[in-house]
Length: 258
Image (cartoon, rainbow, N blue to C red; front, side, top):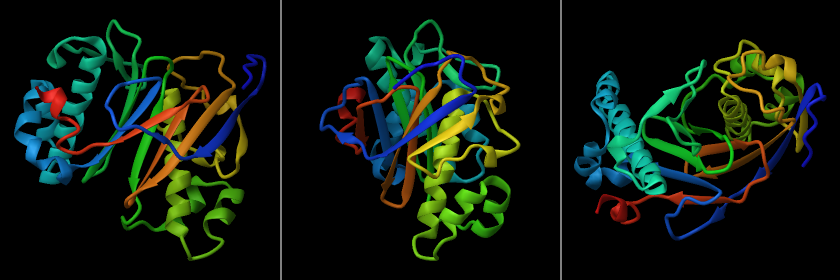
């Protein structure tokens, strides 16, 4: 890894796969994932660990599965962060950057969240900022139309080279782009085709990140991707990371509820 603040480009390095761990302890970079239905037996307990403001946000979802996923995800996030900070989960205070990227008030632990209607994932790191994106591969999308607007020519060729596994290739690149943007805290960008993420190494012009919420002079980003059940998850960090992946179930969160 190198850091060169004079460079005009961000070098993106890509890997696939996480290390796994049987225990729940936030280390250098931990990624937590679950389908909401798998935690349904704990829902009544988990809803006690979100704030009134978060409940109001949850109530704005029209469908029950979206609402329950939001509640479960944000409750477990608070439980994990509270374990790191040794405080009450409801005492955790969030602040938001200029592009609405959340962070902890008064603490340097970093985190990022992504959820679909039926599943969620979040990443926690004590050492560096992070971005994460989760997408369901089985959802209906017009891939041929989307790639024309949001992917480079090289990426389009990669995605459309065959009907076999085309959705997998599409969501692999889509989650990489989203995770990278969320790590930088840029918010939505107009031209995602400038963020090319189809190779093992790609060089992205720093000028396209004109609305960065911060700038650490980072000229490297590392992205890790994994297909989990019917979902793709990608994580972006500014340093090469050893990632612990936790597939949550009712028993694995029991210690947090006690």
